Amino acid sequence: MSINYQDRIPNNVDLGSNRTLQRALEHWQPEFLKWWEDLGPKDFQVADVYLRTATSVDAKGWATYGYVRMPEYRWGIFLNERDPNRRIGFGDNYGQEVWQQIPGEYRATLRRLIVTQGDTEPASVEQQRMLGHTAPSLYDLRNLFQVNVEEGRHLWAMVYLLHAYFGRDGREEAEELLERHSGDADKPRILGTFNEPIRDWLSFFMFTYFTDRDGKFQLKSLAESSFDPLARTCQFMLTEEAHHMFVGDTGINRVVKRSLEVMKELSSDDPQTIRNAGAIDLPTVQKYLNFWFTSSLDLFGSETSSNAASYFANGLKGRPDEAQYEDHVALDQTYSLELPDGSGGTKSEQIPMRNAMNEVTRNSYVRDCEMGVKRWNRLIEKAGYPFRLTLPSTRFRRNIGNWASVPTTPEGTPISTEQFNVHLHDWLPSEGDQAFILSVMHGVHEQGKMAAWIAPPDRGINNNPVDYEYVKSH
Ligand SMILES: [Fe+2]
Ligand SMILES: [Fe+2]
Image (cartoon, rainbow, N blue to C red; front, side):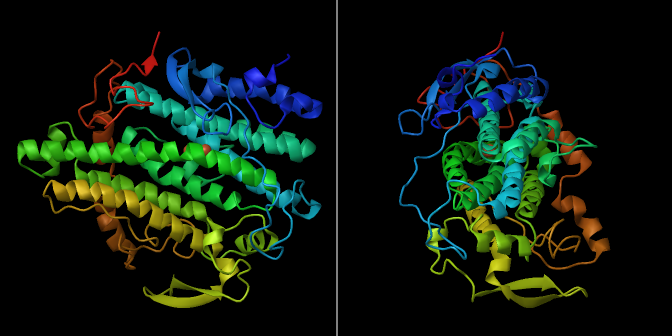
């Protein structure tokens, strides 16, 4: 099979001139398409979807809009322009020239980092594959598919690096990225959150708000890498990631808005009354938020991590927005952690800053998450209700790190397991909550219509009206 690379795989890495790479990708591409057909969006493969496609990295070319059938989407390979003056921005080699090839001693570690990032991209497509059936509108259906094809492109971005810089090992890893599957008992995806099923749109919006935002911070860390092609790849991926978080942010905003409309109409904030009217009550929104936020917190890893310290020392993975820090070597600094003391209280511990890099990144992430919560609360406040959405403590419901399996309240106060179990379903979605959410998820695939549990968005895509025919099914 021969591929016209410029047409089929838009790229700015001169694919056409590298025979070895071409052969590797020619072998991988049909496997990718088979995966897309088997585990990508179910039942919409022949629909015409109004999608944006990146055809170059400049302002003009990175978002070209038009109707595309998803299997014909042009999954391109783009790296940000190379900055010939770029220097290593942190760690032991601070100030030296960045690497265009991988130093032998970091090969295995960098491969692992790229594979771990790459694994999340197809995983989320798999998690979301049934959601098309229950989309609340054509606008939302299109956004789902936009996120899905871009996660597919992010997989291409990582597979390009594996093929281009890791030889045979890289090619094998690229194949395994299509062999592990979300939730699979034998070959699950690498990270826990990416094995959680996403059965409903409230979870989808929480996932795109909280879990894609974890992606943003991972990409920001890798965008600092001394391995320049990885840094440039991640810089470009971040431009797309912004839309995924927008989908989550505005999605939750619209759920809250609709809930408030119904509360006002019925002059009630009783959750059951709101549910009876077909909207989602705010306490349930809080429970879903608690679940996905805490699940995403685990993705940053343990508070204390010698791996994180060596990634930083060796210049493989930095802090997000490394330029904002004064000391890029971070050798003499310490970080203060609040840890469980094992008898129901907490204790402070000072650890070397380099070992605390996961926690530093997690804290930046939490601050970023807070911005949306503030916006949603402004809506509630304006409507005159005392209810407020809140991010739980980073100690709550953790499965990784010092707080793993330590029962606490959402505010982070350690409590007994018994107390935790008593309140479990005040804090996290119960089976009843999940059943209710699923019960309002009916697909609305008619142009101009919107499901009853969500308000319409403020504006459409690419200056089109909200009721534009964003997806044409056949
Ligand atoms: Fe992604
Ligand atoms: Fe994403």
